[in-house]
Image (cartoon, rainbow, N blue to C red; front, side, top):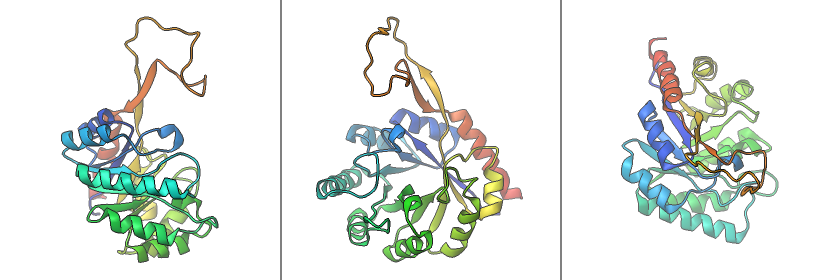
Length: 252
């Protein structure tokens, strides 16, 4: 079996370095993972590029929520792609849908052409399309390099049957990259069941704040149930375990 590539979803330049330490060969750099990921700051992109030796993809998503964007939001995406290209990243991760949940062909084509020679991944907006096989053919024609998908289910394990069909339908034209809930315990099953060779993983731990005084009467976020004195950071040991499990596929 050929080599399996592990891409780590990361929320900061710090997390990107942790993913590299764990053996990931590529990261998808995002901000605001609680919203599914939005475009990180220029400083985050630049520092990650300067310090990483592995592949760096950056999500181009102006907000959380759906994937039907206004003209202003689309203009923001074009500017963010230019920033990513200037920073020297390897690829961008995009996703735009029309109001009927089909791929927005015209806008996607514009962003893809703007992004070149960077690679282009179409993110889990794909999982919100009404017809995944029509969407797959549209993305093939657009020249997208890969599709990140959970098989239109809450996790890749639940979406395994559709993922297997998508891998077969994609052939050598486009990479199908399963994501959501992929870990060291299930990656072998996912690889065997789908035939996929790239996997998208999220592996985090909570890093406690060094603050000595904590004012519990004041809350800065929108959700009082979210911790304010700890933050998620990529867990390099979990990444290493996933990479080790993936490496064992070579001998299968």
